[in-house]
Every structure is written in structure tokens, then in C-alpha cells.
Length: 187
Image 1 (cartoon, rainbow, N blue to C red):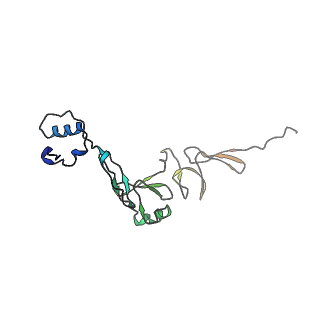
Image 2: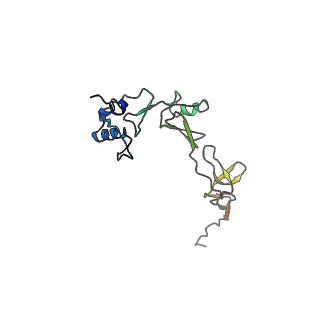
Image 3: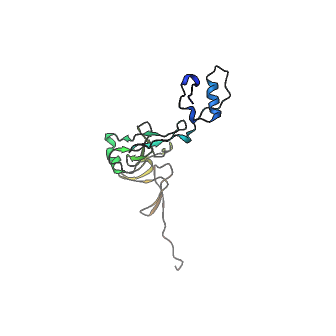
């Protein structure tokens, strides 16, 4: 049976459609006020989809019977080392896969457009933070400096000389209290 609906524009498509959808298609060829038809969705039960080529990722879509085969993203030159260290030795990252950069403070993901999108994984530092610091391999955080090259994380408690010191939640200056030795009851 040859499909001549709407001048043959839907040839081959009607054979895979359910009868109620075919009726809607035929009605849509006529200039009628708002047809009471549901949006057309192809019946994909008879469609055979080809597998994606090597290194391509099948990306499903609500509007297509077959998945779209998305090519991998190429790592930019400045990210080649990070890509290789995280298993993408050939510099290609499959769609939907991710890798970290900048000492794991950013997560980069290959998106279906073929681009690599990176976003910070670090929590936002509180605006009330009085002093910030970054460990060599981590995110910025509120700290209390101890000396020129050392600091402790906000909320930490540390012994210092004959004191116990606490770094407040907003960082800044250590709050220290003297420790007293325990008195023996045998005296």
C-alpha cells in the first residue's frame, strides 16, 4: 500500500504507525481547527537500529526510535595529561564520562555536543570566612593560620604548648585556653 497522505511526504513512515496515529496524520493534512490528536510518536517496534561505531556512545532521545551515535570528545592540549592519567590515553573521552583537573577541584564531562564542560566540585566558601587557605591538593576553605606556612581547618581543635586551641567555624584567629595538669587525689 502506497502512502499518499499529504502528497506522499510521509511515505514509508505510515507503515510503522498505529492506526490512531495514522488517522491523526491524515487529519493534519486538512486545514482544520485544532485537531484533537495527541502528538505523533513513531511505533519503533519494527525498526532495526544500527549499532554505534567504535568509540561512539549511543545517546537515546524521546523523539527518535534509534539512538544518536555521539562521537567522543577530544581532550584539549592543556588537559591531555589529566585525561591520560584517568584512563583516556588516546585523548578521547566518551559522551557522559568525566575526569578531574586542577587537583580534583574541577570535574570535566564530555557532553553530547562534542564539547568538554568543566565545573567546580568545591563547596562555596562562606562569606563570613575571616581567613581562607587551600591545601596543595584541595578546595579553598576557612582556616586559622598557625605560622607563616601552616594553618588548621576551621572547626579543628589542636594542642599547642600548654594550651588547647580551637579554630572557630569562620576561621581567623585560634582561640586557646590553658590546660591544667590533673591533680592526684592521693595528695
